[in-house]
Length: 259
Image (cartoon, rainbow, N blue to C red; front, top):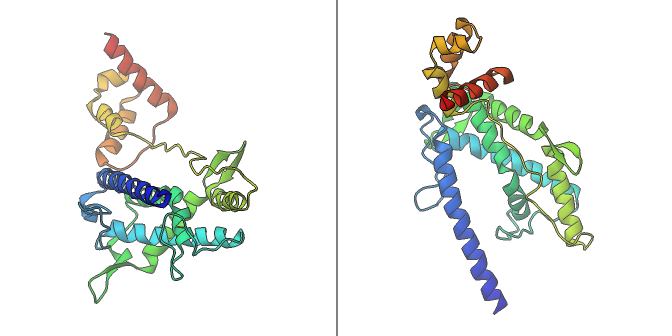
């Protein structure tokens, strides 16, 4: 009976996961320019779509890089890569690596978004094969690899020290080893949390575009600075604001609201 109940619970969880994934990729797609022809990662029936577009090709390659990192961490800790928990155990599949990937997939997603936002991917970075499938050329693969490595090298606070995500991945595999051997009573894959800070928001873009030069002058800034900011905001590309500029913009909105 317990096995049946557990199986039902797993099915329910996977169903919830599928629903969340469907919504996640729909929102993800809103950040991708139309020239990439990206619809979603999964279709309306929550099945994976074929890599017929540039974004899915980049994601697939990034996840392959992440799997390799997971396998390195698993092997370093003496675990069996074929024995998983969430994914089906199969001698020909690295089920545990697929499991370990899940909390770290966002590193690949952000790497791909960064490349898209900086408009670094060119047509020549992709090739259509004889079977009409899309692939990365070596130049494109190198760009994805470099950006993914940048994400792996980013540091986050974990257990009172700053560690790279690459090392965090190794630590999580080691924590799993300790849990399985009874050295730890529990394991938490929700930590560390990664706070995503984007350079700007769509709302801030619209505020800058709508801001008049007279209002900007009242804040104590030059006309040339606003012209440059408006140009960046209209471009659709990511841009950064100095902290004191962002603070004055926010304070200006508060003052306008009070008036």
